[in-house]
Image (cartoon, rainbow, N blue to C red; front, side):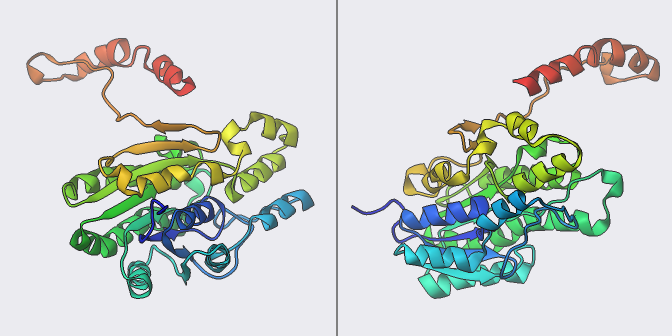
Length: 324
């Protein structure tokens, strides 16, 4: 029986470990040849840029158990009978993204699927962020997605088939301490939705997704909470159920979106969680408004109507939405 992705060729960025590794292994299991990728050989225990956390022995062991790079993932795919080629390099570099696409076509003959999972992050107050940290967060996620689109889309258009899936995060809603990361992920949502419209009718689909699973970043975050005095038991108890599982059980959904079966699904943002949830995010809309007579506002009107009408109850309503 032919597998759903048989004959397809995929690129998965950030596939040395964590969710990206599980995606690459899943695509290969379903028949795709895979270009695996991360920035350079080897892996760091630190998930956050310019952050040095003193890990406990247990934390270090947990991180070392899930460490890897593009080659170790490609080797595992080949060991299981699949086809894979590691390509090291930073996807935020325009030329490197082109090299990945060229490698897919030169080695396997085409490029059908791009899953942009790579990202970089730093956690902290926006006032402590410097230009370098901002650029790293924005470029790896948002510019990297554009770079891959630019190089892959002409070939996808020519062959009449393409699937582009971009990893976002619920941090796009605006989460304290994640200003640049949130901005990059909000950009991914807008980029994906706009580009999906641009390629409509060409046999190409584009979707984004917000994954939630236990990863290297979670172990780093838990260690940071520990350093702030939060007991390990409280960290684990307070974690969402999805953060207590690794990603291998949820990534088949991405293989489905990459298959022929999902030809009519494009321009969406999905929520994907390791506890079994698959959801579709809603599109933001104005939920409350006021109007000026004759379309003209005065400062006097604003001073009265903004607090008494427009903003009255808004905080409570937004808190209720966040709680849901």
